[in-house]
Image (cartoon, rainbow, N blue to C red; front, top):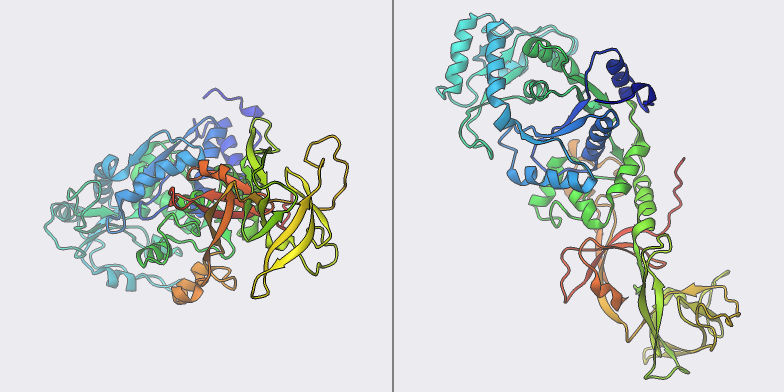
Length: 562
Protein backbone atom coordinates (compact mmCIF):
# COMPACT_ATOMS: atom_id res chain seq x y z
CA UNK A 1 0.00 0.00 0.00
CA UNK A 2 1.77 3.12 -1.24
CA UNK A 3 -0.25 5.83 0.44
CA UNK A 4 0.86 9.06 2.01
CA UNK A 5 -1.24 8.79 5.14
CA UNK A 6 -0.51 12.39 6.08
CA UNK A 7 -2.39 13.54 2.98
CA UNK A 8 -5.55 11.59 3.75
CA UNK A 9 -8.29 13.68 5.32
CA UNK A 10 -10.87 11.50 7.10
CA UNK A 11 -14.48 12.50 6.53
CA UNK A 12 -16.16 10.44 9.26
CA UNK A 13 -15.49 8.61 12.53
CA UNK A 14 -14.76 5.28 10.83
CA UNK A 15 -12.12 6.83 8.57
CA UNK A 16 -10.59 8.59 11.59
CA UNK A 17 -10.15 5.25 13.36
CA UNK A 18 -8.77 3.55 10.25
CA UNK A 19 -6.25 6.30 9.69
CA UNK A 20 -5.12 6.10 13.30
CA UNK A 21 -4.82 2.28 13.05
CA UNK A 22 -2.70 2.52 9.90
CA UNK A 23 -0.42 5.17 11.34
CA UNK A 24 0.11 3.21 14.55
CA UNK A 25 0.55 -0.19 12.90
CA UNK A 26 -2.62 -1.73 14.32
CA UNK A 27 -3.70 -2.42 10.73
CA UNK A 28 -1.59 -3.08 7.66
CA UNK A 29 -4.26 -2.49 5.01
CA UNK A 30 -7.96 -1.80 4.56
CA UNK A 31 -10.03 -4.76 3.39
CA UNK A 32 -13.81 -4.61 3.60
CA UNK A 33 -16.57 -6.91 2.45
CA UNK A 34 -20.18 -6.73 1.39
CA UNK A 35 -21.73 -9.93 2.77
CA UNK A 36 -25.31 -10.33 1.54
CA UNK A 37 -27.47 -13.28 2.44
CA UNK A 38 -28.79 -14.35 -0.98
CA UNK A 39 -32.43 -14.35 0.09
CA UNK A 40 -33.70 -11.38 -1.92
CA UNK A 41 -32.68 -8.58 -4.23
CA UNK A 42 -30.73 -5.63 -2.86
CA UNK A 43 -32.61 -2.44 -2.00
CA UNK A 44 -31.46 1.11 -1.36
CA UNK A 45 -30.71 0.33 2.29
CA UNK A 46 -28.14 -2.20 1.11
CA UNK A 47 -26.81 0.44 -1.29
CA UNK A 48 -25.74 2.59 1.63
CA UNK A 49 -23.83 -0.26 3.24
CA UNK A 50 -22.12 -1.39 0.05
CA UNK A 51 -21.20 2.14 -1.01
CA UNK A 52 -19.61 2.77 2.39
CA UNK A 53 -17.74 -0.55 2.16
CA UNK A 54 -16.31 0.16 -1.27
CA UNK A 55 -15.64 3.88 -0.88
CA UNK A 56 -13.87 3.36 2.46
CA UNK A 57 -11.56 0.72 1.01
CA UNK A 58 -10.89 2.76 -2.13
CA UNK A 59 -9.95 5.84 -0.11
CA UNK A 60 -7.25 3.91 1.74
CA UNK A 61 -5.96 1.96 -1.25
CA UNK A 62 -7.66 -1.27 -0.21
CA UNK A 63 -10.30 -3.51 -1.72
CA UNK A 64 -13.65 -5.16 -1.03
CA UNK A 65 -14.88 -8.74 -1.32
CA UNK A 66 -18.38 -9.73 -2.38
CA UNK A 67 -19.23 -12.66 -0.12
CA UNK A 68 -22.39 -14.72 -0.13
CA UNK A 69 -23.23 -15.26 3.54
CA UNK A 70 -25.16 -18.38 2.58
CA UNK A 71 -25.50 -20.14 5.93
CA UNK A 72 -29.31 -20.46 5.84
CA UNK A 73 -30.36 -22.68 2.91
CA UNK A 74 -34.08 -22.44 3.71
CA UNK A 75 -34.09 -18.79 2.54
CA UNK A 76 -31.39 -18.67 -0.09
CA UNK A 77 -31.51 -19.01 -3.86
CA UNK A 78 -28.93 -18.81 -6.61
CA UNK A 79 -31.16 -16.30 -8.43
CA UNK A 80 -30.42 -13.67 -5.82
CA UNK A 81 -26.69 -14.39 -5.64
CA UNK A 82 -26.44 -14.10 -9.42
CA UNK A 83 -27.93 -10.61 -9.34
CA UNK A 84 -25.46 -9.06 -6.90
CA UNK A 85 -22.43 -8.85 -9.17
CA UNK A 86 -24.55 -7.12 -11.81
CA UNK A 87 -25.88 -4.71 -9.19
CA UNK A 88 -22.37 -3.79 -8.06
CA UNK A 89 -21.23 -3.34 -11.65
CA UNK A 90 -24.18 -1.01 -12.27
CA UNK A 91 -23.23 1.00 -9.17
CA UNK A 92 -19.71 1.27 -10.55
CA UNK A 93 -17.85 -1.11 -8.24
CA UNK A 94 -15.78 -4.21 -8.87
CA UNK A 95 -15.08 -6.50 -5.92
CA UNK A 96 -11.72 -8.20 -5.40
CA UNK A 97 -13.52 -11.52 -5.76
CA UNK A 98 -16.95 -13.10 -5.43
CA UNK A 99 -16.87 -15.71 -2.70
CA UNK A 100 -19.46 -18.20 -1.49
CA UNK A 101 -19.00 -18.87 2.22
CA UNK A 102 -20.58 -22.30 1.81
CA UNK A 103 -17.90 -23.35 -0.67
CA UNK A 104 -14.88 -21.51 0.71
CA UNK A 105 -15.26 -21.45 4.48
CA UNK A 106 -17.66 -24.08 5.80
CA UNK A 107 -14.96 -26.71 6.29
CA UNK A 108 -12.70 -24.31 8.18
CA UNK A 109 -15.58 -22.91 10.26
CA UNK A 110 -16.40 -26.47 11.29
CA UNK A 111 -12.78 -26.99 12.39
CA UNK A 112 -12.91 -23.80 14.45
CA UNK A 113 -16.09 -25.05 16.12
CA UNK A 114 -14.29 -28.25 17.13
CA UNK A 115 -11.45 -26.14 18.54
CA UNK A 116 -13.94 -24.14 20.61
CA UNK A 117 -15.28 -27.39 22.05
CA UNK A 118 -11.82 -28.61 23.00
CA UNK A 119 -11.00 -25.23 24.55
CA UNK A 120 -14.06 -25.56 26.75
CA UNK A 121 -15.76 -22.66 24.94
CA UNK A 122 -18.60 -24.65 23.35
CA UNK A 123 -20.81 -27.64 24.16
CA UNK A 124 -23.53 -29.74 22.58
CA UNK A 125 -26.95 -29.13 24.08
CA UNK A 126 -29.83 -31.63 23.90
CA UNK A 127 -32.47 -29.18 25.10
CA UNK A 128 -35.06 -28.18 22.47
CA UNK A 129 -34.42 -24.71 21.09
CA UNK A 130 -37.73 -23.50 22.54
CA UNK A 131 -36.58 -24.58 25.99
CA UNK A 132 -33.21 -22.87 25.49
CA UNK A 133 -34.97 -19.64 24.59
CA UNK A 134 -37.19 -19.86 27.67
CA UNK A 135 -34.09 -20.24 29.85
CA UNK A 136 -32.34 -17.16 28.43
CA UNK A 137 -33.73 -14.89 31.12
CA UNK A 138 -34.67 -11.25 30.69
CA UNK A 139 -32.98 -7.86 30.73
CA UNK A 140 -33.38 -7.83 34.52
CA UNK A 141 -33.06 -11.57 35.29
CA UNK A 142 -30.15 -13.89 34.49
CA UNK A 143 -30.60 -16.96 32.38
CA UNK A 144 -30.56 -20.56 33.57
CA UNK A 145 -27.70 -22.84 32.60
CA UNK A 146 -28.47 -25.93 30.53
CA UNK A 147 -27.95 -29.25 32.37
CA UNK A 148 -25.67 -30.20 29.46
CA UNK A 149 -23.47 -27.13 29.79
CA UNK A 150 -20.68 -28.82 31.73
CA UNK A 151 -20.63 -32.18 29.99
CA UNK A 152 -17.08 -33.40 29.17
CA UNK A 153 -15.62 -31.71 26.12
CA UNK A 154 -14.76 -35.09 24.60
CA UNK A 155 -18.42 -36.08 24.80
CA UNK A 156 -19.49 -32.79 23.16
CA UNK A 157 -16.91 -33.30 20.43
CA UNK A 158 -18.19 -36.79 19.61
CA UNK A 159 -21.80 -35.60 19.63
CA UNK A 160 -20.87 -32.72 17.34
CA UNK A 161 -19.18 -35.11 14.91
CA UNK A 162 -22.22 -37.36 15.03
CA UNK A 163 -24.39 -34.32 14.24
CA UNK A 164 -22.24 -33.71 11.17
CA UNK A 165 -22.49 -37.39 10.21
CA UNK A 166 -26.28 -37.14 10.17
CA UNK A 167 -26.95 -39.43 13.13
CA UNK A 168 -29.51 -37.12 14.74
CA UNK A 169 -32.78 -35.66 13.47
CA UNK A 170 -33.24 -31.97 12.64
CA UNK A 171 -33.47 -29.72 15.68
CA UNK A 172 -32.59 -32.43 18.20
CA UNK A 173 -29.11 -31.14 19.11
CA UNK A 174 -27.36 -27.81 18.90
CA UNK A 175 -23.83 -26.60 19.48
CA UNK A 176 -23.74 -23.61 21.83
CA UNK A 177 -20.96 -21.23 22.80
CA UNK A 178 -20.19 -21.32 26.52
CA UNK A 179 -20.05 -17.66 27.55
CA UNK A 180 -22.14 -16.34 30.46
CA UNK A 181 -25.81 -17.04 31.19
CA UNK A 182 -25.92 -13.97 33.44
CA UNK A 183 -24.42 -11.59 30.90
CA UNK A 184 -26.30 -8.27 30.58
CA UNK A 185 -26.30 -8.72 26.80
CA UNK A 186 -28.75 -11.55 26.22
CA UNK A 187 -27.02 -12.43 22.95
CA UNK A 188 -23.99 -13.49 25.04
CA UNK A 189 -25.98 -16.07 27.01
CA UNK A 190 -24.64 -19.22 25.38
CA UNK A 191 -25.83 -18.57 21.81
CA UNK A 192 -26.39 -21.42 19.37
CA UNK A 193 -23.58 -21.62 16.85
CA UNK A 194 -24.58 -24.79 14.93
CA UNK A 195 -27.92 -26.47 14.27
CA UNK A 196 -29.02 -29.61 12.43
CA UNK A 197 -30.95 -28.85 9.26
CA UNK A 198 -31.34 -31.16 6.28
CA UNK A 199 -32.15 -28.37 3.88
CA UNK A 200 -30.84 -28.75 0.35
CA UNK A 201 -28.30 -25.98 -0.23
CA UNK A 202 -28.41 -24.19 -3.59
CA UNK A 203 -24.60 -24.27 -3.78
CA UNK A 204 -23.32 -27.28 -1.81
CA UNK A 205 -26.31 -29.57 -2.31
CA UNK A 206 -26.63 -32.13 0.49
CA UNK A 207 -23.00 -32.07 1.64
CA UNK A 208 -23.97 -30.57 5.00
CA UNK A 209 -26.77 -31.39 7.41
CA UNK A 210 -25.48 -28.93 10.02
CA UNK A 211 -25.12 -25.21 9.44
CA UNK A 212 -23.38 -22.45 11.42
CA UNK A 213 -25.55 -19.58 12.58
CA UNK A 214 -24.87 -16.08 11.33
CA UNK A 215 -23.44 -14.61 14.55
CA UNK A 216 -20.73 -17.29 14.57
CA UNK A 217 -20.16 -17.73 10.83
CA UNK A 218 -19.91 -14.04 10.03
CA UNK A 219 -16.88 -13.09 12.17
CA UNK A 220 -15.12 -16.34 11.20
CA UNK A 221 -15.69 -15.62 7.51
CA UNK A 222 -14.40 -12.07 7.97
CA UNK A 223 -11.28 -13.38 9.67
CA UNK A 224 -10.64 -16.15 7.12
CA UNK A 225 -11.05 -13.63 4.33
CA UNK A 226 -8.55 -11.22 5.83
CA UNK A 227 -11.13 -8.49 6.32
CA UNK A 228 -9.80 -5.71 8.53
CA UNK A 229 -12.96 -3.60 8.92
CA UNK A 230 -16.38 -5.22 9.06
CA UNK A 231 -18.70 -2.27 8.43
CA UNK A 232 -22.42 -2.65 9.03
CA UNK A 233 -25.46 -0.68 10.13
CA UNK A 234 -26.51 0.06 13.69
CA UNK A 235 -28.88 -2.91 13.93
CA UNK A 236 -25.73 -5.00 14.41
CA UNK A 237 -24.35 -2.83 17.22
CA UNK A 238 -25.71 -5.13 19.92
CA UNK A 239 -24.01 -8.07 18.14
CA UNK A 240 -20.54 -6.51 18.28
CA UNK A 241 -19.73 -7.92 21.71
CA UNK A 242 -20.48 -11.42 20.45
CA UNK A 243 -18.55 -10.76 17.24
CA UNK A 244 -15.49 -9.78 19.29
CA UNK A 245 -15.86 -12.84 21.55
CA UNK A 246 -15.77 -15.20 18.58
CA UNK A 247 -12.76 -13.38 17.12
CA UNK A 248 -10.94 -13.64 20.46
CA UNK A 249 -11.77 -17.29 21.14
CA UNK A 250 -12.12 -18.70 17.63
CA UNK A 251 -9.55 -16.74 15.60
CA UNK A 252 -6.83 -15.79 18.08
CA UNK A 253 -4.58 -14.15 15.48
CA UNK A 254 -3.22 -10.59 15.04
CA UNK A 255 -4.79 -8.07 12.69
CA UNK A 256 -8.25 -9.45 13.40
CA UNK A 257 -11.24 -7.68 11.86
CA UNK A 258 -13.03 -4.88 13.67
CA UNK A 259 -16.79 -4.46 13.47
CA UNK A 260 -17.91 -0.84 13.26
CA UNK A 261 -21.44 0.43 12.78
CA UNK A 262 -23.15 3.38 11.10
CA UNK A 263 -26.74 4.59 10.99
CA UNK A 264 -29.30 2.77 8.89
CA UNK A 265 -30.98 4.45 5.94
CA UNK A 266 -34.51 5.41 6.96
CA UNK A 267 -36.50 6.75 4.00
CA UNK A 268 -39.98 8.12 4.63
CA UNK A 269 -42.87 6.23 3.06
CA UNK A 270 -40.65 3.58 1.45
CA UNK A 271 -41.22 -0.12 1.99
CA UNK A 272 -37.97 -2.00 2.58
CA UNK A 273 -37.37 -5.37 4.18
CA UNK A 274 -36.85 -8.39 1.94
CA UNK A 275 -39.57 -10.49 3.59
CA UNK A 276 -42.24 -7.91 2.77
CA UNK A 277 -41.01 -7.30 -0.76
CA UNK A 278 -40.89 -11.06 -1.33
CA UNK A 279 -44.49 -11.37 -0.13
CA UNK A 280 -45.64 -8.80 -2.68
CA UNK A 281 -43.70 -10.57 -5.42
CA UNK A 282 -45.07 -14.00 -4.49
CA UNK A 283 -48.64 -12.66 -4.34
CA UNK A 284 -48.12 -11.04 -7.78
CA UNK A 285 -49.16 -7.65 -6.47
CA UNK A 286 -46.19 -6.15 -8.35
CA UNK A 287 -44.36 -6.87 -11.60
CA UNK A 288 -41.50 -8.63 -9.83
CA UNK A 289 -38.39 -7.72 -7.87
CA UNK A 290 -37.63 -5.08 -10.51
CA UNK A 291 -41.00 -3.37 -10.24
CA UNK A 292 -40.28 0.37 -10.69
CA UNK A 293 -42.14 1.10 -7.45
CA UNK A 294 -39.66 -1.05 -5.50
CA UNK A 295 -36.56 0.60 -4.10
CA UNK A 296 -34.57 -2.49 -5.04
CA UNK A 297 -31.52 -1.76 -7.18
CA UNK A 298 -33.10 -3.55 -10.13
CA UNK A 299 -36.36 -1.65 -9.54
CA UNK A 300 -34.65 1.74 -9.34
CA UNK A 301 -32.63 0.95 -12.46
CA UNK A 302 -35.82 0.00 -14.33
CA UNK A 303 -37.57 3.16 -13.21
CA UNK A 304 -34.73 5.26 -14.61
CA UNK A 305 -32.73 6.15 -11.52
CA UNK A 306 -29.00 6.56 -12.08
CA UNK A 307 -26.18 4.98 -10.13
CA UNK A 308 -24.48 8.37 -9.69
CA UNK A 309 -27.70 9.92 -8.42
CA UNK A 310 -28.09 7.16 -5.84
CA UNK A 311 -24.45 7.42 -4.76
CA UNK A 312 -24.67 11.20 -4.45
CA UNK A 313 -27.76 10.80 -2.28
CA UNK A 314 -26.08 8.19 -0.05
CA UNK A 315 -22.98 10.36 0.31
CA UNK A 316 -25.15 13.33 1.30
CA UNK A 317 -26.49 11.28 4.24
CA UNK A 318 -23.01 10.99 5.70
CA UNK A 319 -21.49 8.21 7.82
CA UNK A 320 -22.78 8.83 11.32
CA UNK A 321 -24.14 6.81 14.23
CA UNK A 322 -27.19 8.92 15.03
CA UNK A 323 -30.43 7.76 13.41
CA UNK A 324 -32.57 10.09 11.32
CA UNK A 325 -35.41 9.81 8.84
CA UNK A 326 -34.88 11.25 5.38
CA UNK A 327 -37.72 12.49 3.17
CA UNK A 328 -38.17 10.61 -0.09
CA UNK A 329 -37.93 13.87 -2.01
CA UNK A 330 -34.27 14.09 -0.95
CA UNK A 331 -33.52 10.99 -3.01
CA UNK A 332 -35.51 12.40 -5.91
CA UNK A 333 -33.52 15.62 -5.72
CA UNK A 334 -30.25 13.83 -6.46
CA UNK A 335 -31.79 11.66 -9.17
CA UNK A 336 -33.18 14.78 -10.85
CA UNK A 337 -29.84 16.58 -10.57
CA UNK A 338 -28.03 13.74 -12.34
CA UNK A 339 -30.69 13.19 -14.99
CA UNK A 340 -30.60 16.88 -15.88
CA UNK A 341 -26.98 16.37 -16.93
CA UNK A 342 -27.45 13.22 -19.01
CA UNK A 343 -31.07 12.78 -20.12
CA UNK A 344 -31.93 13.36 -23.78
CA UNK A 345 -34.61 15.98 -24.41
CA UNK A 346 -37.66 15.00 -26.42
CA UNK A 347 -41.15 16.37 -27.03
CA UNK A 348 -44.05 14.24 -25.81
CA UNK A 349 -47.64 15.42 -25.44
CA UNK A 350 -49.32 13.55 -22.60
CA UNK A 351 -52.85 15.00 -22.97
CA UNK A 352 -53.22 16.02 -26.63
CA UNK A 353 -55.25 18.87 -28.05
CA UNK A 354 -55.26 19.14 -31.85
CA UNK A 355 -54.24 22.43 -33.43
CA UNK A 356 -54.72 23.24 -37.13
CA UNK A 357 -52.37 25.90 -38.56
CA UNK A 358 -54.78 27.30 -41.13
CA UNK A 359 -52.24 29.34 -43.09
CA UNK A 360 -49.68 26.53 -43.42
CA UNK A 361 -49.90 24.26 -46.50
CA UNK A 362 -51.19 20.72 -45.93
CA UNK A 363 -48.42 19.14 -47.98
CA UNK A 364 -45.57 21.03 -46.37
CA UNK A 365 -43.31 19.99 -43.50
CA UNK A 366 -40.57 21.93 -41.79
CA UNK A 367 -37.70 20.07 -40.15
CA UNK A 368 -35.86 21.75 -37.31
CA UNK A 369 -33.17 20.77 -34.85
CA UNK A 370 -33.87 19.93 -31.23
CA UNK A 371 -30.92 20.09 -28.85
CA UNK A 372 -30.51 16.72 -27.15
CA UNK A 373 -29.11 18.14 -23.94
CA UNK A 374 -28.25 21.81 -23.35
CA UNK A 375 -25.88 20.74 -20.55
CA UNK A 376 -23.77 18.55 -22.83
CA UNK A 377 -22.14 20.09 -25.89
CA UNK A 378 -21.35 16.64 -27.27
CA UNK A 379 -24.95 15.38 -27.09
CA UNK A 380 -25.84 16.74 -30.54
CA UNK A 381 -29.30 17.33 -31.92
CA UNK A 382 -32.17 15.44 -33.50
CA UNK A 383 -34.77 16.40 -36.10
CA UNK A 384 -38.33 17.28 -35.28
CA UNK A 385 -41.13 18.48 -37.54
CA UNK A 386 -43.60 21.37 -37.79
CA UNK A 387 -46.64 20.93 -40.03
CA UNK A 388 -50.21 22.09 -40.58
CA UNK A 389 -51.66 19.74 -37.95
CA UNK A 390 -49.98 19.55 -34.56
CA UNK A 391 -50.82 18.56 -30.99
CA UNK A 392 -50.23 20.56 -27.83
CA UNK A 393 -51.01 19.84 -24.18
CA UNK A 394 -54.60 20.63 -23.22
CA UNK A 395 -53.31 22.51 -20.20
CA UNK A 396 -51.44 24.85 -22.56
CA UNK A 397 -54.73 26.38 -23.76
CA UNK A 398 -57.31 28.19 -21.62
CA UNK A 399 -60.69 29.66 -22.51
CA UNK A 400 -60.74 31.51 -19.22
CA UNK A 401 -57.11 31.90 -18.24
CA UNK A 402 -56.12 32.40 -14.62
CA UNK A 403 -53.93 35.37 -13.64
CA UNK A 404 -50.39 35.35 -15.05
CA UNK A 405 -51.27 32.62 -17.55
CA UNK A 406 -48.63 32.85 -20.28
CA UNK A 407 -49.74 30.14 -22.64
CA UNK A 408 -52.26 30.01 -25.47
CA UNK A 409 -55.61 31.85 -25.35
CA UNK A 410 -58.04 32.96 -28.01
CA UNK A 411 -56.47 35.97 -29.70
CA UNK A 412 -53.17 35.34 -27.93
CA UNK A 413 -49.79 34.18 -29.13
CA UNK A 414 -47.27 31.62 -27.95
CA UNK A 415 -44.01 30.23 -29.27
CA UNK A 416 -43.78 26.58 -30.28
CA UNK A 417 -40.53 25.09 -29.03
CA UNK A 418 -38.03 25.13 -31.91
CA UNK A 419 -40.57 26.38 -34.45
CA UNK A 420 -42.82 29.41 -35.05
CA UNK A 421 -44.91 31.75 -33.00
CA UNK A 422 -48.60 30.95 -33.47
CA UNK A 423 -51.77 32.90 -32.77
CA UNK A 424 -55.08 31.30 -31.77
CA UNK A 425 -57.99 32.61 -33.87
CA UNK A 426 -60.82 30.18 -33.23
CA UNK A 427 -62.04 27.29 -31.10
CA UNK A 428 -63.90 24.47 -32.90
CA UNK A 429 -66.31 22.38 -30.85
CA UNK A 430 -67.64 18.88 -31.45
CA UNK A 431 -71.30 17.87 -31.44
CA UNK A 432 -71.21 17.41 -27.67
CA UNK A 433 -69.96 20.92 -27.02
CA UNK A 434 -66.42 19.86 -26.18
CA UNK A 435 -63.35 21.43 -27.75
CA UNK A 436 -62.45 19.44 -30.86
CA UNK A 437 -59.49 21.51 -32.02
CA UNK A 438 -58.04 24.99 -32.26
CA UNK A 439 -57.58 27.02 -35.42
CA UNK A 440 -54.36 29.00 -35.32
CA UNK A 441 -52.06 30.78 -37.73
CA UNK A 442 -48.31 30.81 -37.76
CA UNK A 443 -46.57 34.14 -37.97
CA UNK A 444 -43.99 34.32 -40.73
CA UNK A 445 -40.36 35.14 -40.06
CA UNK A 446 -40.60 33.96 -36.43
CA UNK A 447 -38.89 30.62 -36.78
CA UNK A 448 -36.65 29.97 -33.79
CA UNK A 449 -33.16 31.22 -34.47
CA UNK A 450 -34.04 33.51 -37.35
CA UNK A 451 -32.33 36.83 -37.00
CA UNK A 452 -35.37 38.80 -38.12
CA UNK A 453 -37.59 37.21 -35.52
CA UNK A 454 -38.02 40.05 -33.03
CA UNK A 455 -41.54 39.46 -31.79
CA UNK A 456 -41.65 38.99 -28.03
CA UNK A 457 -43.82 36.32 -26.41
CA UNK A 458 -44.29 35.43 -22.78
CA UNK A 459 -44.72 31.69 -23.22
CA UNK A 460 -43.08 28.78 -25.03
CA UNK A 461 -44.79 25.40 -25.27
CA UNK A 462 -43.83 22.02 -26.71
CA UNK A 463 -45.77 20.15 -29.39
CA UNK A 464 -45.65 17.23 -31.80
CA UNK A 465 -46.63 17.15 -35.45
CA UNK A 466 -49.26 14.71 -36.72
CA UNK A 467 -46.70 13.78 -39.40
CA UNK A 468 -44.02 13.05 -36.84
CA UNK A 469 -45.56 11.29 -33.85
CA UNK A 470 -46.71 7.93 -32.57
CA UNK A 471 -48.61 6.67 -29.54
CA UNK A 472 -46.69 5.54 -26.46
CA UNK A 473 -47.66 4.25 -23.03
CA UNK A 474 -46.71 6.21 -19.94
CA UNK A 475 -46.47 4.48 -16.57
CA UNK A 476 -47.06 7.00 -13.81
CA UNK A 477 -46.07 6.05 -10.27
CA UNK A 478 -46.78 7.02 -6.71
CA UNK A 479 -45.00 5.48 -3.73
CA UNK A 480 -46.13 1.91 -3.27
CA UNK A 481 -47.47 2.61 0.22
CA UNK A 482 -49.93 5.21 1.47
CA UNK A 483 -48.55 8.54 2.64
CA UNK A 484 -49.80 8.13 6.18
CA UNK A 485 -47.41 5.20 6.64
CA UNK A 486 -44.08 6.99 7.02
CA UNK A 487 -42.47 3.70 8.12
CA UNK A 488 -44.34 0.92 6.30
CA UNK A 489 -42.09 -1.88 7.54
CA UNK A 490 -42.85 -0.95 11.16
CA UNK A 491 -46.58 -0.98 10.45
CA UNK A 492 -46.30 -4.48 8.97
CA UNK A 493 -44.15 -5.68 11.87
CA UNK A 494 -46.86 -4.44 14.24
CA UNK A 495 -49.48 -6.55 12.48
CA UNK A 496 -51.01 -4.19 9.90
CA UNK A 497 -52.17 -6.27 6.89
CA UNK A 498 -50.04 -5.56 3.85
CA UNK A 499 -53.08 -4.73 1.71
CA UNK A 500 -54.03 -1.94 4.13
CA UNK A 501 -50.83 0.00 3.55
CA UNK A 502 -50.70 -0.27 -0.24
CA UNK A 503 -51.59 2.77 -2.36
CA UNK A 504 -54.47 1.79 -4.62
CA UNK A 505 -53.33 3.85 -7.61
CA UNK A 506 -49.55 3.59 -7.25
CA UNK A 507 -49.40 2.65 -10.94
CA UNK A 508 -51.54 4.36 -13.58
CA UNK A 509 -50.99 3.84 -17.31
CA UNK A 510 -51.90 6.57 -19.80
CA UNK A 511 -51.34 7.17 -23.50
CA UNK A 512 -49.33 10.00 -25.03
CA UNK A 513 -48.05 11.20 -28.41
CA UNK A 514 -44.26 11.22 -28.82
CA UNK A 515 -42.15 12.55 -31.63
CA UNK A 516 -40.83 9.79 -33.90
CA UNK A 517 -37.30 10.28 -32.63
CA UNK A 518 -38.25 8.15 -29.62
CA UNK A 519 -38.70 5.11 -31.89
CA UNK A 520 -34.91 4.83 -31.60
CA UNK A 521 -35.12 4.43 -27.82
CA UNK A 522 -33.85 1.30 -26.10
CA UNK A 523 -34.77 -0.11 -22.68
CA UNK A 524 -33.28 1.93 -19.82
CA UNK A 525 -32.61 4.95 -22.08
CA UNK A 526 -33.32 8.14 -20.17
CA UNK A 527 -35.20 11.17 -21.43
CA UNK A 528 -36.50 14.49 -20.29
CA UNK A 529 -39.92 14.95 -21.80
CA UNK A 530 -39.82 18.72 -22.16
CA UNK A 531 -41.79 20.56 -19.51
CA UNK A 532 -43.15 17.26 -18.12
CA UNK A 533 -40.44 15.31 -16.31
CA UNK A 534 -37.87 12.53 -16.62
CA UNK A 535 -38.72 9.15 -18.11
CA UNK A 536 -37.00 5.88 -18.93
CA UNK A 537 -37.95 3.32 -21.55
CA UNK A 538 -39.23 0.13 -19.91
CA UNK A 539 -37.93 -3.33 -20.74
CA UNK A 540 -41.48 -4.49 -21.53
CA UNK A 541 -41.51 -2.29 -24.62
CA UNK A 542 -41.77 -3.77 -28.11
CA UNK A 543 -42.30 -2.37 -31.60
CA UNK A 544 -46.06 -2.30 -31.02
CA UNK A 545 -45.99 -0.67 -27.62
CA UNK A 546 -43.29 1.71 -26.44
CA UNK A 547 -43.54 2.05 -22.65
CA UNK A 548 -41.92 4.85 -20.66
CA UNK A 549 -41.64 4.86 -16.88
CA UNK A 550 -42.05 8.14 -15.07
CA UNK A 551 -38.80 8.54 -13.14
CA UNK A 552 -39.06 11.87 -11.35
CA UNK A 553 -40.78 15.21 -11.84
CA UNK A 554 -39.06 18.07 -13.61
CA UNK A 555 -39.00 20.28 -10.53
CA UNK A 556 -39.67 20.07 -6.83
CA UNK A 557 -39.69 22.53 -3.97
CA UNK A 558 -37.17 20.49 -1.98
CA UNK A 559 -33.80 22.16 -1.49
CA UNK A 560 -30.66 20.47 -0.31
CA UNK A 561 -28.27 22.09 2.15
CA UNK A 562 -24.93 22.26 0.38
